[in-house]
Image (cartoon, rainbow, N blue to C red; front, side, top):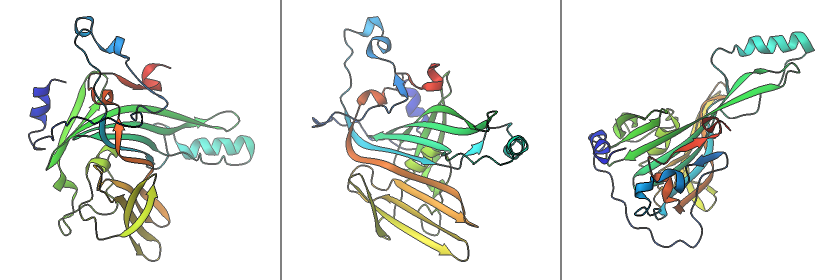
Length: 283
C-alpha cells in the first residue's frame, strides 16, 4: 500500500512511531505459524527490483498466540436441527465439538501490527454424526498511533480500513478499558490497558509476567482480565478477558503463548508480500 495512503488513513490516529534499527538477535526471528505461508523472495520481488532488494532486518516486538470466542454453527446451519437429526438416526445427541471460535497469531513491532485469524464453525454432522468443522482464514493489519489506530483487513482485492480513537473503547469513569472489552480480535490487542498497577500479580506466560483483576457478582456472574505487566514493548496488551453470566462465558479470550521483546521476521511487515492460510491458498 502506498505510504501516502497510509498517512492519510492515519489522520485520526496521530503519528505512527518510526521504525528503529534492529540489533542482532541471538535466536532466529519469530516467523509464520504452521498452516500459513507467504510469498518467497523469488515470487515477491519483481525482476526489475531484484538487484536492489534487501530482506528486511528482524524487528523487536511482541508475539501472542491464543483463542477467543464461542464455537458456533456456520451461517445457514441450524445447530439444534442437525443435532435432532442425529438423535433420530442414532438414539443419542452428538457431543458439541470442543473447539474455539477463533484462533489467532498476533505480531507487533514499531507501531505496526499483523493479526492472522482462523475462524472455526460447525458445518454439520456426517452420517455417523461426527462433527464437521469448517475453518476460514483472514489477514489483518493495524497502524498504531498515540491516540488511535487504523485497522486493515485483506479483502482479497485490497485492504479495507477503519480508523478509531482509543477513547471509543475506554470507560469514562475510569479512563481505561473495562473487563469484557469484546469486539474484533485485532481491536482487543491494539487497545491496551492503561492502569497497570491496580491489580494482583497473575500467571507467567512463557517468560512474560501478567497482572490481573477480577470481580464477582453473585449468584452467577463475574469476570476477569489480565495484561502484560511490562517492561517490554507489549506492556498493557490484554492476555485474558472474560465475563460470565448465568454460568456461561459470553466474552472470552485467552493468550496461551506469549513472547515480548522478541525478534520478529521483518518480512511479516511487508504489506505487499502475500500471506495466506490453507483455505486461501487452495491447499
